[in-house]
Amino acid sequence: MTADERRAVSPWNIANVLTVLRLALVPFFVVCLFLPGMGWRLAALAVFAVASITDHLDGELARRYGLITDFGKIADPIADKALTGAALVCLSMLGELPWWVTIVILGRELAITVLRLVLIRLAVIPASYGGKVKTVLQLAAIALYLVPWVPDALRWTVMAAALVTTLVTGVDYVIRAIRLRGMARRARGE
Image (cartoon, rainbow, N blue to C red; front, side, top):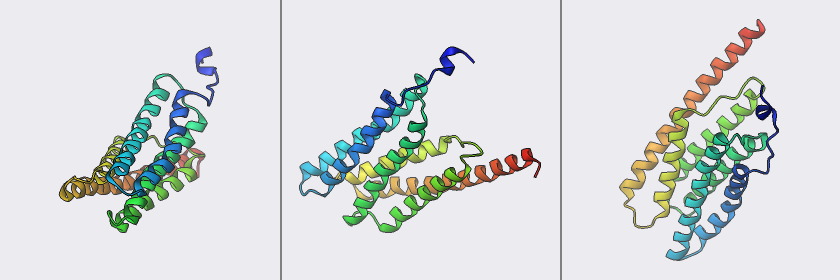
């Protein structure tokens, strides 16, 4: 192990600052979304877009410059869930997105988060390509719902793709978790 690999990474780095910024933007997004008028709706879209960009940027910076920290591993998924969860709940409260869609997506996210916490002592299951596609589709679908003049057919098509991908990647994660648990049991000789 080299000296660089042993050096401690401060939790006060640009990747974590972006994660905290994303979390801090969530209340502003919610307020903008509930204020009346097209200007506020577009402001909500802008805040959501900035927060979504930080989601990609913080991970990219953390990986590229070795800024991965325990804080970031915990805070990043919390910030992600806070942003998408707030958006889905708000859109459902406004009557623009059926509640069942919000419940299915948030239920899957909650279940996988609990599963991750249960498995954390065995290993971390890395994000899959499908998980990244799921995130992009969810963010795109939410953004389309925030733009008032987007045709409903386009909104529903992208949201349906996000919903299907969310469920499929959830099942894939459960399968990988079961395999991981089996490998851990075999390694312990159980």
